[in-house]
Length: 114
Image (cartoon, rainbow, N blue to C red; front, side):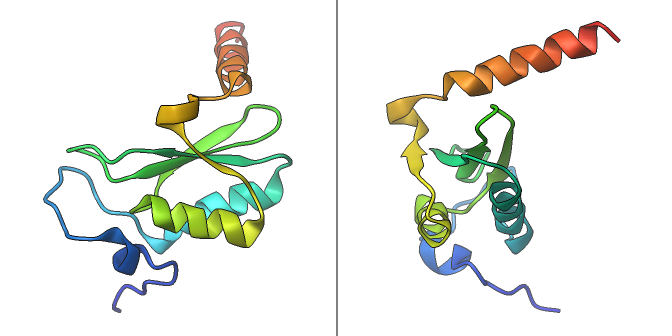
């Protein structure tokens, strides 16, 4: 079965560049959408493409819980965020939210007590 381009990943991506990592798929975008729909106060943070990794987006909920997925290009996550009426930020300009760091710290403490 041929891979579908439901979210415009191929169209919005631009020229193909060789990478060590895999490219974004519909499943990546659907995981971000599912995360955003199942949690409150979600914001998206776009991370730049690197030589080894495709452009990624981090979805961060109100409580700091987060998930990261490949998106192919910033235009893809901007389209998803617009469709879901959620904000999207460039992590290089804004940095990560403090609640994300607090969530990571809580998780580390919880894992250390078990």
